[in-house]
Image (cartoon, rainbow, N blue to C red):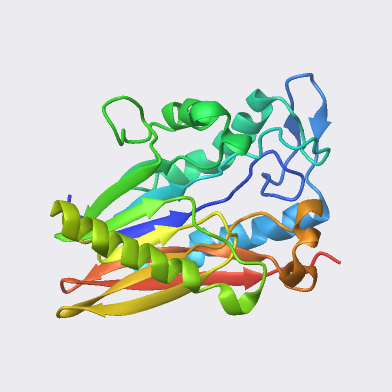
Length: 270
């Protein structure tokens, strides 16, 4: 099957009370019933619009790969008290309930590892979820990995969750340019193919930069997330007033060239 599209989502943080949750009562491991909040229901409406309207409008019903680029679960970290449950079994359950209908639509699912504070040491809980969702193995040792090289046709894309962050808006692009430059240097050292698109996440916000390279250009972009602002966010200068960015991206091979599309929505929570 020839696949020309790749849908990318990241930073879902399932299990957080500020993140996605199916719009129904959930029975947690202890037997407690959890009902999603009003904000979670608003998030769910954006999720449904993304999958039912926006993705089909770009892919035109053609097959697509799905890449989840890290931080799928909220985990238990830094003494937080905002999770729906601190039991990883509950967080994996919420994730699987949300993702299984989406995975069925994809030609293949790939899962990139995120941050250990969210996913456990060596992303052990993301690995468990990947097996439940029948994700395609990335390495010989495990289903998930910290880095993914994926081709759409003959065009190469590189995925990794982490990237440098900035506490101010005017510095957001610097880390993306460094990612491109470092990739070019390593490709020159070792002779590997240069990817045309680099995908990074972790920031929960989108920005894209491109630089010319030979007869084409190299693009690097960061993905938005599916989590609203948590108490940690208000420590960051620029985050005090900004709206959380919700959405995802699509990379398509159009007549032999990679084209990027981005779905970005803001959601007030005050």
